[in-house]
Amino acid sequence: MDWNRFRELTQMPGVPGAEGTVRKAMRTEIARYTEDIVQDRLGSLFGVKWGTAMQPRVMIAGHMDEVGFMVTRITEKGFIKFQALGGWWNQVLLAQRVDVVTRSGKRIPGVIGSVPPHLLNNERRKKPVEISDMFIDVGADSREEAEKAGIYPGDPITPVCPMVEMEGGKRLMSKAIDNRFGCAMALELLEDLTKVDHPNTVYAGATVQEEVGTRGAVTAAHTVKPDVFFAVDAGPAGDTPGVENGFGEVGKGVVIRLFDRSMVPLAGMRRFLIETAEEEGIPYQFFVSQGGTDAGAVHKTGIGVPSAAVGVCARYIHSHASVVDKEDIRSVKRFLTALVRRLDVHRLDEMMRD
Image (cartoon, rainbow, N blue to C red; front, side, top):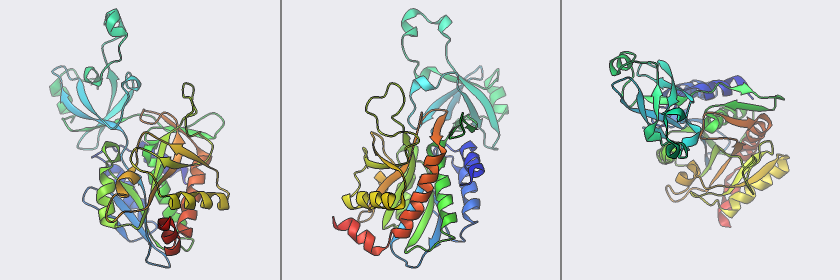
């Protein structure tokens, strides 16, 4: 597992609709393992690995985008008003650091602010602050000063959180684990497939604009025309204080989604995932979510694509800092390679027969 590459991917800016920096890095890395690269017009990107058979066409994808923000206007005094991109809970935003990314690629540091409690009456102190009442302070004294720095409406804004190894060395904390984790897994898979045979054709890479409605997954599926699809993503862990009967524990292995609001996997697909994990000795756990993944979009394309969402649990996703377990990530890496090595036309037929 290339942990340096994982760190670099998480630290890149890449909110929905502005994934260019991540895409450029992904293209460079994919080119290390294959000359065949496919990109659609929205920017989803895949490396192709030809196996011992043309069929089935197996598409495996993370997504490049992270939850973030967009500049909507600059006030007369130089404060930045913004629009959320992706699902944010207002209470995790205040006093957090961000970077405004200008057209030139310059990253201008700022902090999310609001009216301090000292200046609020008792009634307003009891209410959560709405995003519409927040602003970003980049240190400018006027709109002209902010514009001179290169800030304009439409510019992307990304959270700031360097990757750090946590106490004990087992876990990592960083921004954008959702879903540079999936991007890293696609690259790890491509690397693994340079060393092993597989009875299929694999398209491994990453989609765009997942956090704003799985938009890139649709165009990617129309481009690749897969026979089967695996979304590789980070889901919310249910093992922290305040969560009762939650699904997903950090450190307990690969997450296999049984159900979410966007998709129910085929029974045959579910059996294939479980059998592979058990026969390969890979720890796994089940997950039920109120969210969705790219699998929810891809499985409805064409004449239907058997799909599944697999990945890891991450604490505090859709915030500035998420926490994941390194051994969980290693397990997903092993799992994806095992799935690909087992997935031939006969397995796919069995999957769809049930």
